[in-house]
Image (cartoon, rainbow, N blue to C red):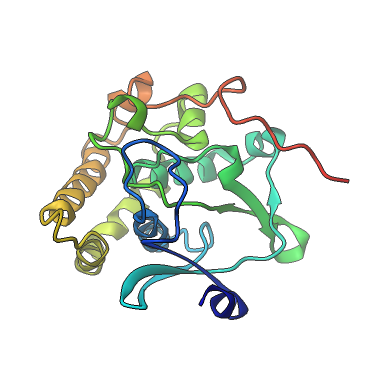
Length: 239
């Protein structure tokens, strides 16, 4: 049960793991998909430390994501977010773009203790990745990411490191494709896995071929721009 899982230092999401409907049009019990896929894609991109590790497992005959529990996380402030190096912001924006991230507001970015006391960025709550029905430019289901917003506002270009990261995805296509098939396997949506995979590859290749962000991102038409006034208000500090 959940208590036993928590003792093992894991948290999980499954068909009954996300009972609160956060956004219309997103079926209950599907957040495990993003929680598993985003860390796998991040790891392939060379960003393994950017998200908690997660695996897909059966529990009581249902699919769940079992996720690493990371202690002692702290909310990031807007000031800290603005100080994230441009190269790192570009890498995180690239990840959010590839996974159709619709929920990367400031409270889904935290910091954890790193080497020599330096705090590291951690991207959490990835359950609403791959939820944009039409991909770019689909109204309420457009991209929502503080890092993509920064790419627009600061005109951060795709750098050589981002291109190298994308090429790594090509090298690991078969394993990622199998994971897509497992995560999106559903009798109700028999074509969902191949559809999501083809769109994912198309997003990757669009940047590799052009060397730049798609026009929909640069124009902001396909992105809910999270400016200071549009972001979720910061949580009050508890003394």
